[in-house]
Length: 60
Image (cartoon, rainbow, N blue to C red; front, side):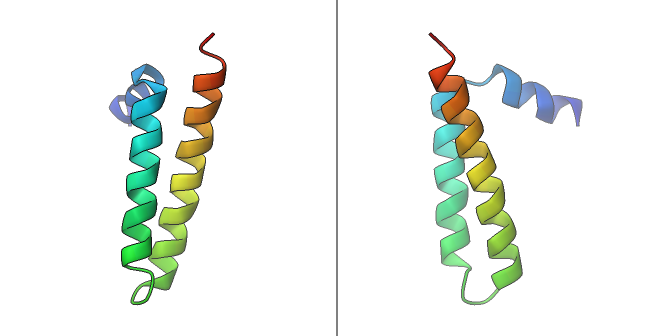
């Protein structure tokens, strides 16, 4: 858990944005068969993208 938190704290905002977009794409692929899992992945992707955007804006 500590390694996961340190990854989000130390990674660049662009990597977080790419990670969020990748998770969003994956959730769209499995949306027809596993709707609940896809909704959870979409929520996680949204949180990662918003966090990445905040870090990008506050980087100045």
